[in-house]
Amino acid sequence: MSTPAFPPLMSGHPVDAGIDPFEKACAMAALGCDAGVIVYNVAANRLAAALVMAPEVPLQEAMAMLPLCAVGFQNALGALGPPEVAVHLEWDGGLRVNSAACGRMRAMAGTDDPAALPGWLVVGLDLPLLMTGTAPPGARPDETALYEEGCADVDATALLEAWARHTLNWINRWEDGGPRALHAEWRGLAQGIGEEITQGGRTGTFLGVDENFGMLLRDQDGTHLIPLSSVLEQST
Image 1 (cartoon, helix red, strand yellow):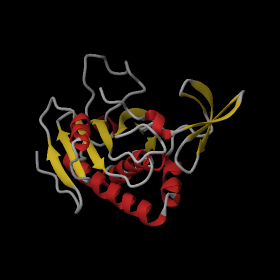
Image 2 (cartoon, rainbow, N blue to C red):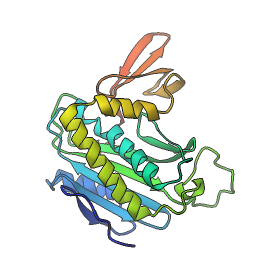
Image 3 (cartoon, helix red, strand yellow):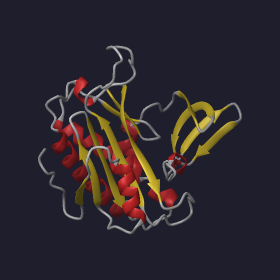
């Protein structure tokens, strides 16, 4: 495996197989490592990476980094993969390739208080490259892996590099111009808007998101706001 080259302000920290890059990045962030570190492992069947950030805004605003990193992934695969491969983004971080579940983005922060400065925020990318396990073909029709979807020629290290570049570009745009452009890009890729979904123990129609990417869900009792910080993973 070649060593990935990351853009300025980002640096790579490889980990061996068996070490979860997301968990490692969260531990490093909690100990005060520099923002911009990407902890990663590129294996034959999976690409896993996590980006450490140090937001200077409250958590409810900083949570925009979860959809931002997902948009960065879509842009990266769009640049490297076949044009007919479609990527859509679930509100809670799930990734879908050609309509099937294909990995996810995940997030953890130094606080779960939406109004507090988080200190650190880690967004992880977990992407299956090959289907593994003993299930026969077709047994999991709603799950897929990248190389099963016509992307076998996409080099995983190049995809990691492209994800970093596109994510950094979107971070700069978000810092300089606010969330408007990110909202427009994400909405064009979002999965399930206008459809009935279940989230946070409620089932209703997914109307869209507010300015901080909180989900607007309408059911028989009215319209409810589910903050994006509700999908944060908790440290164990």
